[in-house]
Image 1 (tube, rainbow, N blue to C red):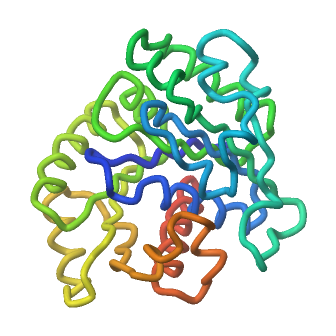
Image 2 (image 1 turned 45 degrees about the horizontal axis):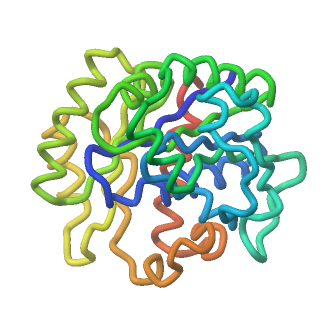
Length: 258
């Protein structure tokens, strides 16, 4: 049965898009058909991780939301683009639905908004028409109408936070909202944790604060920063501690519903 996965954070700069792209790619590596949709329309960027630039994007999520095209016309099969040197297993596919990076399109979103209800229709249409096993939603940080919709329809919600007091407070608000929306499966991901931290102690402390399981702790890594979002890290460096943490996140996804 298809599942919708939202990956969200209360604040920007948590590595949300990077984690979304890596989780989606690892799900595809395990033989699944995976869609990735960038609903961070005000500051899109996940397409860069899949090796795409503005010139390669003919139609985007913006075009669908403004009635210019059908949702399936915004889909790009990026299976061949991910993981230089790593081949996705036969039969698996990964599809990207990007948002526009054009300044005029972003300005129009800020000025006019869009019909958020179309997102729900688009999500369901993608799952059905692409025969997806998973749809991964890279959300806009914070809480607005779009993120509330994404959270509400999710089968699995991952909230990303850094070990930072501002993140802790904002995440508490988001966890409370997710529970009121009755999200069936809520997990936390701690990103950019210093290597000097006791990860077991950090995991226990965060789980006690939010009464939710921590799926993984990703260490702060110069290797990730050095890649500069030019590729899918967990495919390029499968034995790296960050990649191992991403695979633990995917284990949680696959365990849901079993």
